[in-house]
Image: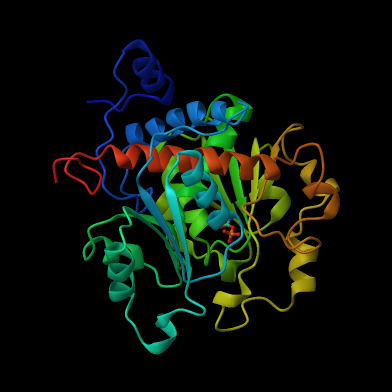
Length: 334
Ligand code: CP
């Protein structure tokens, strides 16, 4: 059977009263999701975003439920976005960071989460430096586990909010030419974007960066590799820029930040190679003057702040859809 196109799947979703069922207990990555599940989250987020324009920006969907934010790595956007999303759905929120907790006394990840669960957490949103940590957790706790970034593996809600922003701004994902530029090797954002965009029928997916940060095997994920910035972004509809993750590099993978900026820094002059209205995206945090110039970051093509706004809608959609899991932690009959 042929896989439906994004337009067909969207039309089908709108032509019937019942939306695509979403029966997942956890959100661990976009690799695991079907195309229909990704579309269902994006569609649900559209409805969630409408709530932002109301006088009272709150709905009772998760009243009585508790979301625990467990961040074992630093975060500004993702942590606050999940907190706001949970509060807009009327859930209670527990914020936990490894610094100052009993993790420093040797408590294991599973014991830490079981402790928080014993206080009544229904959802555990976790960021961890170890790839696969949320998967391990999902097999050992009762709560719904949401991956808020695991090592260099996946950052599914960032991938979803990136796709939501492209679709909102350009009206489609199918057929688009998208370039992801920067430290691809260490980027969980790149991997989630690749999985998601490939499922939704993006036209060309180009990865751009120095050879040391862009291994050949990324070709097997259906991407074109480019080591020259101008060539890589020529004619694209979207440029998604990543920062250099020095904290994940155990060896020097390029001579200096200055050289990286000269070869790969996105400037006004350079973005002229892309489509005239190409979207400029960045998951943050930005290193201005390194991977992106001040003018491009704050310029008319930049949708960086809109990505942040859309992140709240995506996280509301994810929490809401997971809460409908039958037989899961939120089921009344368990
Ligand atoms: N994009 C992103 O994950 O940002 P934070 O590290 O601030 O959460």
